[in-house]
Image (tube, rainbow, N blue to C red; front, side):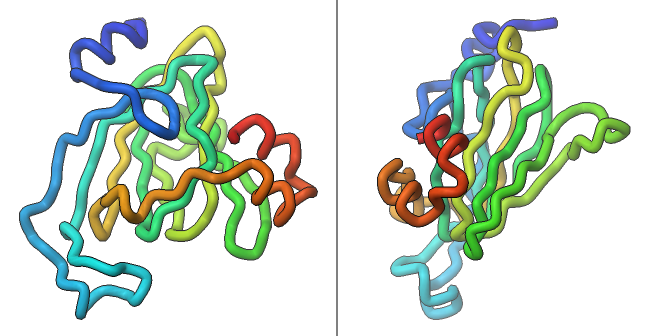
Length: 165
């Protein structure tokens, strides 16, 4: 099995603010005008964007949320657990990985405005995934969670909040 370093070099990935490594691979030339978008968007957006995203075994994707829906696609390495706290405060996980017989998804979509982060299931491995965002990703739409704020709002999820903030 290839190592994380191979993929980081091969795909020219760089550190991501939420943790892990990434590289944008597609940004649609089709532009969606603010007038046709939901009110949560303050500017025009590309129709869709996509990235490669890699987490090393002990890395985490910190809790964050987007104004757009984001689909994760499994490519290589270990399965990954996506940790989600939805708008109602309900916590759940989704496994992204290579084995549907073990309740893993090849693709999973996180709805906009849900807090989510991820962990690699095998600490001596890595997870290489793709992420597709529609309407397209803009850092203006990206918010990393503050631990104190999430703990105040969702104290019942303190263990995972402590781990992913």
